Length: 380
Image 1 (tube, rainbow, N blue to C red):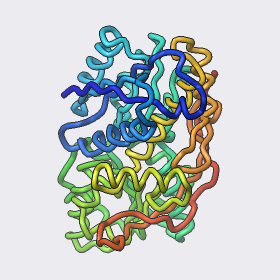
Image 2: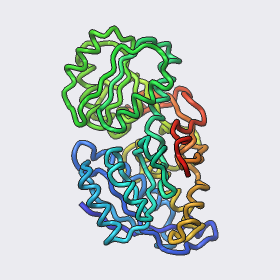
Image 3: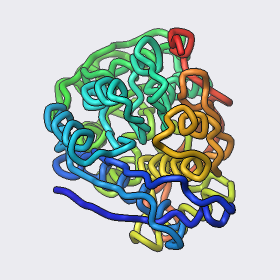
């Protein structure tokens, strides 16, 4: 599926600065299959930011295509966008294995890649690149916060599990960086797995006092529902991905009360976030997810850079991106030396709002001003 849209950038005009040149963005994201909700929120959050910028100018073109959650498809789309569509910036990939397939070749060809979600450790460290920015996080971050939250809650014997792909490996690494207690078990599941009876049996027999799991999209929906029906009462803790707004309706009340970690929540108290949440609800009729929030910030970062520099002047545009001169829905936001965020990480709890809709509210701060563990490996 392909969507071609031209959206305007009145923000630059309101700031008194006209864009030096048009900017063409190639969005590769997941719009079909089990991960479609994540990609749809990514697309919608990005488009909303551009819509809210107004229509006084028409200087950004966005070409959107469905990667089908397949690395080979993502590579084919990226090649076409670079060679035929002549995009200046690539963005939108949700999954780390797809990012690792696309990003290195894209930046080597002189294109900017701005990540709305995937933040594999290799791209934060040894394979960092001046043209690569993660606007979301480094993969370990939410899991590091979960590890700290587990320590703060007094858990001493945690069972941990994640799917066997780069983000899953980063998840368990990140959790163990901050959680220093015993492990009742550590397992990797299959990507796309839907039956967790075997894993739940292992948890039941492990003697764990808590379970940390990272299972995004449909994997998390399946696990949480099966876990709730299993009779196992060991408390769950995880990153936001399995408790994001796009999956909570499918999980249902089984998610109530579960604590999870993220850099953002709908109730985060700052002006930019209030504007974003209300506008998203009005535009799409649903509460935004963390994927939408990160994509919204990514679009606003592009807006801020394009107002200062011509995208064809790579050095100037890169410097404008590094300044991160936009109002993030996450509040304080800066880039570290490897062009990954420095930001606060929160503990959230799944609740029902006044309308009876499942959502997340912030209950505490897990880690303040967190960068990432790989910046020192980056030689930029």
